[in-house]
Every structure is written in C-alpha cells, then in structure tokens.
Image (cartoon, rainbow, N blue to C red):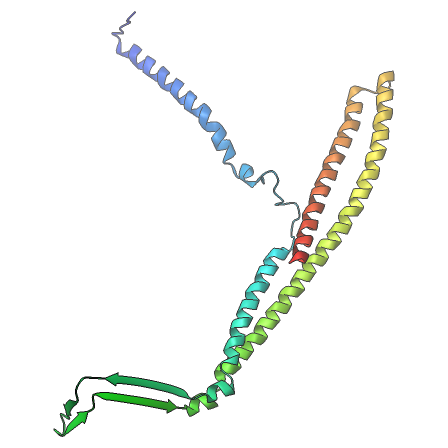
Length: 245
C-alpha cells in the first residue's frame, strides 16, 4: 500500500520523527564507548597487573642489573683506552711504509727553476717517526683513568641502591607476614561468630541483615588475605630474580 502526503507539514513531521529514531539508535551505541574512555576507566589497572599495589616502591633489581651491565661495558672500554694510551704505547714509533713501481723512468721538471730531475721507475720509502708531544702528553691516559674511577663510583652507588631496595622489600615481607598471621586469627574468630549467628538466626534471635553482616566481614577479610598473598609473591619473585643475577 502506498500512502501519499500532499501536506508539506506532514512530510516534515515524518522526517523529524525518523531523524529522532536514528539519533537514539546511534546514541545508544556511542554511550558505552564514551563510558570506557573516561579518566576513571583508564586509571583502573588491568587484571593481573601489580600497578598500584605498592605505592612508592623502589626500582626493581632488573633495572639495577641492566645498569650494572652497561657500566661494565663502559669500564671495559675505558680500561682498553687507558692501556693503549700509557707511556709504553706512546713510545712505540710510528712506521709508515709506501712503495710504488712503474715501467719506465719519469722525467720531472721543476716549474720554478726549470731544473730537470729523474724519478726512477721503482721508488720505496720507509718513514719512522716518534712524536715528542705524544710521548709527553698523558692527558688521554689520565682521562681514561678518571672515567674508570667515575664508573667505579657509579657502580658502587647502583649496588648500594639495589641493596637498599632489597632491604626495604625484606622489611615489607616481614610486615606482610605479620598482617597475614593477624588476618588468619581474625578469620578464625569471625568464622566462629558466623557459626554462632547462624544458630541464633535459626532460633529467630537475630535478623537476616545481622547474619549477612557477619558473612560480609569474612568475605572482606578473605579479599585482604588474597591481596597480601599476591603482594608477597611479587616481592619474593623480585628478590629471587635479583639474587639469580
């Protein structure tokens, strides 16, 4: 069936109605995406991530180990430079050997004096020279030794920082152990209270909300125990990985 509207106002109302339905349809699909892009949604760490569990934690042992390896590479480079710039290496003469050959002798005329000279077809040249300034100048060797001392100081600082980080993590482990023991004792007490509340609820002495309150306390305590176990495992893995290196 075909319906024709001769009235322009009727056609305009139908167009506005269709446009409204289209906007509602697209708005329904856009709203969840906008909710996920909020700063609060982006701030939530993904599941399995340890971000935010230990605020203010020091650098991990892996970063310190990488920095120590880089310092060892720099130390080896400056050590070689210091060895090749000591006095004995500077006393070694510089030898330059060049050789040339040709089929015939070449006549060479000096443009200034017009004096002819004969260049033999085979010419050999051996040059041995020792630079006095290079022998007396030990700046390269001294610079290399200073760089080695600097690298040693940086390595000591990195080792001290890693030791402080491990000490702080060991202290944190002991704190977690104390909190876990206290939480386990509290869990045992709350389970006894819950069992007693269930008996009282069966006798009609307490309401359902009081029973649920006892159950929620145990649920919250179990969540705390899981979080402590997760943090403890992360610190132990970090310590074991650093000691393995």
